[in-house]
Length: 131
Image (cartoon, rainbow, N blue to C red; front, side, top):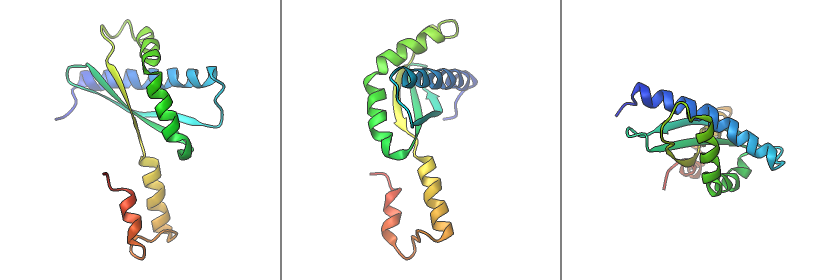
């Protein structure tokens, strides 16, 4: 089912503000050397749940940082609600997902350049399969 204009607008507002809130949180906690971006926010039709897709570079720090974001989800939700109080009556529940599309693109580039050839090494194909 396609997103409505309202869902897209709310997703865009949440994406921009959530990125700002996360950057501010990283600055406050003196976390350096990590780039975090919110690549997409999808909102359900009833506007009760917002799924935020987060890209984290370098990828080796991704899982730990995603767990930390999930642990402080209520704090992030509160800060986000303060920013969007004039646009939203009720703040949707946040859930964070790791956006691994950059890793996927990098693996395709390596395959094209011949660094990792999935034809010669079929085990490389299993990296992208979802379990």
